Length: 302
Ligand SMILES: CC(C)(COP(=O)(O)OP(=O)(O)OC[C@H]1O[C@@H](n2cnc3c(N)ncnc32)[C@H](O)[C@@H]1OP(=O)(O)O)[C@@H](O)C(=O)NCCC(=O)NCCS
Image (cartoon, rainbow, N blue to C red; front, side, top):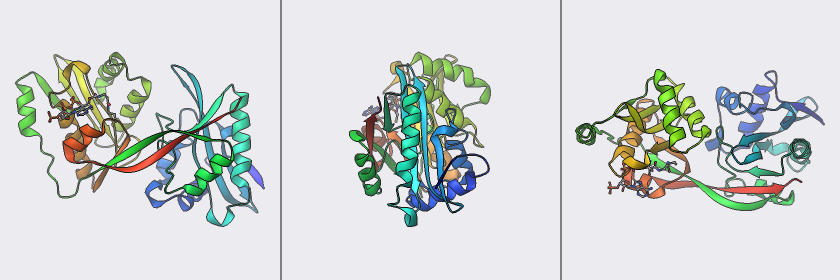
């Protein structure tokens, strides 16, 4: 077996290993696979690896080291071994290299969790990937907490917000698709509300689709709320937030529905709300339901 770093030259093969190993609901196009791996701002060739046997990629694992306000964390973002190569210790070999590299970089624990700002899932789905959970437990990972996604049905529904928007206009609040030149205003808003740089980055990713999947509420020339969709892949919603002083006025509901309507026009049947968050708000607004649960798991390294 050879262990090789992920690069542009083996990206397509790595993407095929990933897609053939995970459930269809977690499949990624080559562009989105690149977005989540090579283009990750913390991409590191020493922790993004392929195990190759007889010239064929058999297993893939992707670790990152993320710096944040409270220090540094290590994450396994994804790992996958082709079904026909399972049980032959390829994933184990990749994890050994990744964990020892992260430990050498001063990372005290590695998580299978939510490596924002670029993540595919906020942890591991224990129902779809029970053997993978078993593998992680065997390597010393322990369950720490649960995360979940919610789904909102889009097909055939009407998310018109005209009346609610008219009512807010009389209070001086307008809601619209954000213009690229308003990025600094959004940065100011997200920082002032204390949501941190990951939400700003995710909102920026949502700006990159055409048309942008980012809507804002504005009052007195300042941003008072935002909602993003398509930031982490098509069909996914989040993040969103309303200024603490403006909550309960219907701003969040309008912003959310604007995104749902945008996703409808992009041909989506279902909106996946990632790593929720205020379950009651999403359920009350459009009847969204919990669709998937994830375990966050952690292993001390030092
Ligand atoms: C969730 C959030 C965006 C809602 O924004 P908002 O502008 O206050 O929402 P709205 O005023 O449109 O609320 C619509 C309805 O949901 C209810 N609601 C809003 N937030 C709620 C919450 N956190 N829990 C339960 N119900 C909530 C409102 O009471 C309202 O109900 P009503 O129609 O019966 O009056 C806002 O609370 C927020 O910014 N929270 C912090 C950031 C966050 O958690 N973002 C989501 C990340 S997944």
